[in-house]
Image (tube, rainbow, N blue to C red; front, side, top):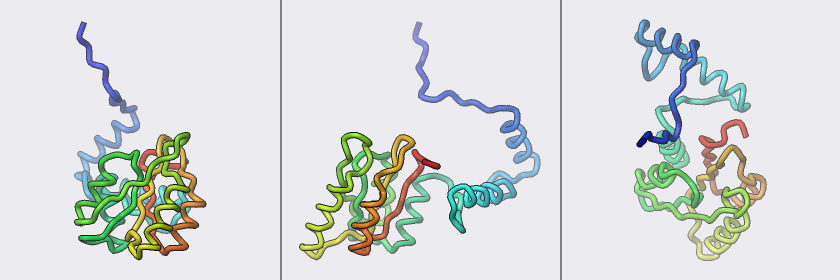
Length: 168
């Protein structure tokens, strides 16, 4: 039998189906509405931030964040090697170049020591990146403290992509 093995089968409970039905009945499909507003407010409470904006995808979120920190054509942005294509895509959308920093062998997240070495070397060359996109993988946070410490030292903005580790 040639039965496909699905990556993730869709599932909706009764409550989710009611929300979908309500969205169609009230014509609040996109891009805003009472459920989007409620999601943003609850998200702020859960992660402890004063502001949040729901966007259409993780790629759109990265693109927006990179623009907000001033990344433009010709810039370089350091990012994780082990990530979804959205990381590099959002960087290249702006005409910038992704520069990959390798991962730690145990967590698969960015290796803080390799990042420090790369930034120290780039500082000596006078060629620091415009930003760092740090991807938190597989439900676990990257080793954030040494990463923030070295980025603070060189005044490199850190964009955290927690799409795979929200709440970790």
